Length: 222
Length: 227
Image 1 (spheres, rainbow over the protein chains, first blue to last red):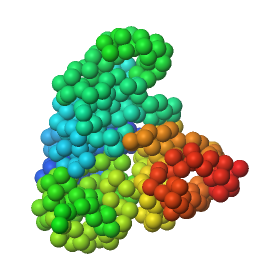
Image 2: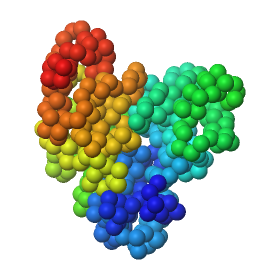
Image 3: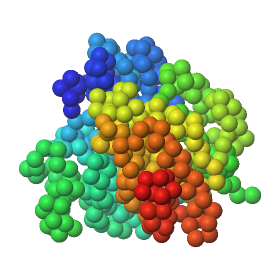
């Protein structure tokens, strides 16, 4: 986070630091046309310079003035999207069995539940969650701190993936899990990380490397 | 007859077995308010209720009737083209030096130029995913794209052969310190190589990373002139 970002307003200081970008929370990137229109109206009213769809399945509204931030949020009536900071940045999910023909598991249902529970939760480093409904793995769950892949025989859960400067594939934590068991495993992994005393900005994958995969698995009850 | 994807028009059949999803053509995921409003109007006109911002920064319109596909594209001012479907080919870019404080290269200009020159790339039998990031934090996930660029102060880092899906692979770096033009030319050569491999029975329907594991990276390095 840069000094000038305004985290509580979800505002990211843009280059040159004269204006801000906000990224309203759009769980899974699914937005009804009526809500999309409302967002466009607010972007117009507050003279946004441009809009950008992001990797976190959000729409960044770029070029807002600091003085307009409160009014913008009041107008759109949407929650803040945690695009920055040390927290659960996003729960990415695919159309799953709701829309996609390939979907084996209900990625939207589980994704929404995890989003409600975890999006924005403060942690010692950034943390990404991905839920894919089939083996094609649209949102690359193996490269998220926690990734779920829906297979015909249930959910596969991986942990410790990252896709930044030092990419790492997540380790297998569980297979053939039903919705409830998969969610419970996610909870255990999350609680372990949240409850630990880690140095700031050290992501889950590095922690697993440091303490060893077996030790990590034991700690999360796998 | 049972319906299927209509890839020639970039339309993906939805789970209902009736309607289709298509992607709006918005290079680098960037659009202005006017374009956004127009897309919303088009969506309403054709009975689309749900939009999805995809993980690769595209806007999908979900629930289009088969007979409306051409009209939706026409209203958006683009042609229906093969290769443009969701899940097929895309160029994903982060905000880069235009917007982001960390950006060291102009990713959006690069994505637009690449979009103009290359997108959609014909006759490649597998997916083509390109990620352009303006710094090593890698918002656009270049390490898990078929072709990835990372902008650093001295130029672009070029990586190839990544994949994030069914058979995940981390891309290998093949060149560093490239100028914009050098990077574009290299990407163009890689695409030609990919297309060539796409037509060979030995490597048909395979992602670039799988092809490179069979054929070796050195051959590609020679082809793009970075030995």
